[in-house]
Each structure stands twice: as structure tokens, then as C-alpha cells.
Image (cartoon, rainbow, N blue to C red):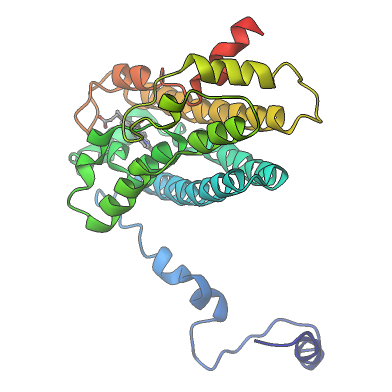
Length: 285
Ligand code: HEM
């Protein structure tokens, strides 16, 4: 580690110009984050020009899923510790990551149907459905479906991480515990339910959020938290819809490589709502 003084001296010795020689070693930039390894991971099997766009888009989104899951775990920890302003700062960052994810579809949708068909057969049965990173994201957000761990049985590390996320309280569970601590009571049987089962909306949660939304001023931190969760769910739905529209544009109503009917299946999946009571109360508000 260099001290600030050493950095100053070095900048003086290079005359303010960049360092050009690292004694024949990988440059520190490449070594710090294994950029050479990262850039060696785009082996497009079809040899067609357009497959690189598809592969890099998938890899980029995988990295963003990873970052988002990392930040969501931090937001969940902050909520559990009653650090609401800190949690809101994390949500602000998550929004920016999600915007990047949604924007990713602009690139994917430049693929024409013929270009996609040029490499599609090389995917075999590979599908984004088998993404452990995406599944982790859904689990931490609260979309719990034990059967979705099935594709990951052959990857013990991923399976263990997903199994832990399946059993852990989701981000929304921590928000509900917070509401309860702050006097917006949630039914005990709901808080103590089996966390590995799909989430079912509950009247006591609707009532709690309705109570919070009685004061929609910026001074109400629980209201700000509710809106941050709605922002997150909103952008998540945008990602799902942009995926669906890109798929329809690129391959119409053909079946997916992962075994589904394709666009029809994606439509059904897109009906799922994160934080359902935060949506349902809006009709009454
Ligand atoms: C031309 C591009 C794409 C097409 C045609 C496409 C098609 C599909 C189809 C048909 C499915 C349903 C499952 C199946 O049968 O395969 C699916 C699921 C999925 N795809 Fe894509 N996809 C594309 C790009 C991407 C990219 C770039 C990502 C980013 C990682 C991605 C992530 C996913 C995920 C996560 C699912 C599962 C969704 C869920 O379980 O809710 N897809 N895709």
C-alpha cells in the first residue's frame, strides 16, 4: 500500500504521466480484477458474428444480478437493524443497478430473428431459467418456490447458497418485522409461517401498510421504505416485461430452449407480484 506522500512523489517522478512499465508482469489493473480471465470467457460456439452480443448481454446481466443480490442482502441487514435512512441509501443504489438491467434489453433487441436463429441450436437446452444468480435474486426478494432449486442440484455451491436463501427471511419479511416492531401489528401466524413456501398476501399486512400510508409525507420513514420497495418491484416488473417483449421480437411464439412454451410461459411468470400488499392497498388509498 502506498501512502499519499509516496503517491505524490511517484507522480512527480513520472512527470505526471502514467506508468508504462511493470517489469513484464500483468499490469496491476488486469491483476486486480482478473480482467484477462473475464475477457477469456466469451467462447461463442457458433462462430457467428451476432452471438457475442447475446453472450455478453447474458454475462453482464449475471454480474448485475450478483451485485443486486449483494446490495439487497445489505438493505435487508439494515432494515433488521432499524437503520432506515441507511437502507434507503442502499435502495437508491439498487435502483441504478436495475435501470442498467432494464436498459440491457435495448442491446439484446437489436438481434434480428435470423441472427438469433444463426446460433440458437448451439444453446441446446441452455436457458436463463437455469440462472442460479437470478434464482437467488428472486429468493431474497421473497419469491419462494422450493422446486426452482431443482436445476442446481448438480452445482453443490450454488445449491447450498440457494437453499440458504430459501430458508432465510426475505427482504420483505424483514420489512414486515420492522412494521410490527413499530406498532403496525402483523398477525403472528403470518410472521411465523413456513418461509420456504410461496408468499400469500395477508389482511394484517394490508392493514399495516394502509396505516403507514395514512401519512404520505417525506417525514414518514416507513412510507419512504414502502415506496422504495414499490420502486424496486416496479423496475423488476419492467425487466421481466422487457425480457418478454425482446423474446417475442427475436423468436416470436416458438418454444424456449429451457423446455417452456416460450412467450406464453413468460407472460404467466410476469403476473407474479413482489410485495403484493403494497400493490393491493393502492386501490383503496
Ligand atoms: C434473444 C434473447 C433471449 C431469448 C430469446 C430468451 C428466451 C427465454 C425463454 C423462452 C425463457 C423461458 C424459459 C425457456 O423455456 O427457455 C427465458 C427465461 C429466462 N431468461 Fe431469457 N431469453 C433471452 C435473453 C436472456 C438474457 C440476456 C438473460 C439474462 C441473463 C435472460 C434471462 C432469463 C431468465 C432469468 C429466465 C427465467 C425467468 C424466470 O424464471 O422468471 N434471458 N428466456
